[in-house]
Length: 583
Image (cartoon, rainbow, N blue to C red):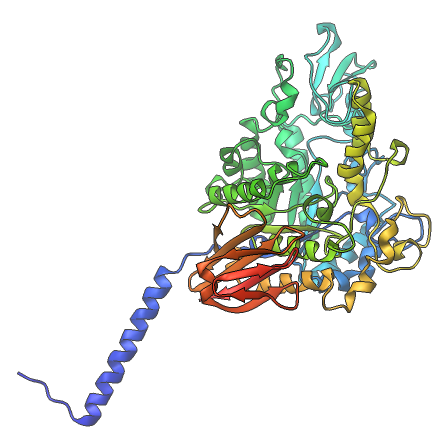
């Protein structure tokens, strides 16, 4: 039987079929779109503040909470979504606060607990999360736990640390990253040696003791109750130790992480921490270091592990620690390899600088007055267009640079002083050593924030704890704030672009023309959204031919006023960075 329709009925049928077809097509497209596990700590940009160098409010030369409160609007203007702050706990400050004497108290230099709470509230009102730096691989030797432990082997806190009874003779050698004499120090009162991976004033905590672990979880809960949103676990890959203290082979310290980091028991402690703190408080955590292999990193952060959330590795920064520089081919290879390894599970931190490395533009860009601005803009474009959570360090949004410090007398950092002592002990060429130290010392990253061109860069009305970089007259917030082409405003454009385009957060990464010697080219793809990123890492013009150019729709970001495109070839100016939206 043939069904016949009137004109009106036929039109209605066609419309119905079209609607049905469109709905089915939409469902097919939605079902083919990648599933996204959306998390704020994936989508946000973390801004790291070194508090004693950020802003001083009372003229004592040290940055403090009230100084940060004064600049909350500035921090918000950056478009960042979280702040990670270095330690501000009660401390003798042997290692600038990474030697904690009381985990629940504020060092008076930074202010009071009331100041902290006001600062935290200020961040929260602006939609900015707060990440606390937790230093629990070791404590200060002035902490009440250690003061008790060193007094007697019968003290309740003795087993909170690692001890070697002197009657057993000399302890097996352990390398110290800060102490040229090694990782054991003798205490006469209890006739024992204690272990310290870092300075002798930083005794290692005994994570194999469940009482110690519970103390740490209680400390984390204390800060979570105040509203802290996450934790950065300092030096945590070294927290677990083999308490039989076996002999290590001579020269083992050259593979420090292999011998001192990532013991299997660490995962048990992290699962315990997740159950005790991270899950019930809905906070996230990232450990400094990700072991020696991809499997180490995945075992820390894959979702089904229920341990940590973000892997933070050092392979990229390690390639830039000498004046010899780095090869772009190696840079590409490292980032591409890590991205590939985490394409399906786990999550990475993307960073090029922090408080333990010299300035971003000196190591990966070009700090000369001619190229400082475009090369810093290019590097910030890279950081904010890669898959992973970008970590940016205070001052890098301005292009702050290293500061010349040619003699050891100017250094106050315990790491630099310890490395100098080791170099002397080993009979190294000290002129060459100082040249390298001047370039890579982490003190370069700790100079005061450059706010304006007034005395001491507007950081303090007193004598700054660390000499201000003399180039503050040219590089400062006030000079860049209203300049649309400044490093600062380019950074703001990039955080906004990332925030408004999930493809730059979750999109698939694919490197293009990886053999190109000057240009780093890659795409990010999420469903129908696709972007092409072109970065010239050279001080010369450079061209690249790509079929993708034919599908270019518009330029989303460009640190120059224009870009030259001829057919499928793009020519980039020195350190030019361009992001295109493509079909």
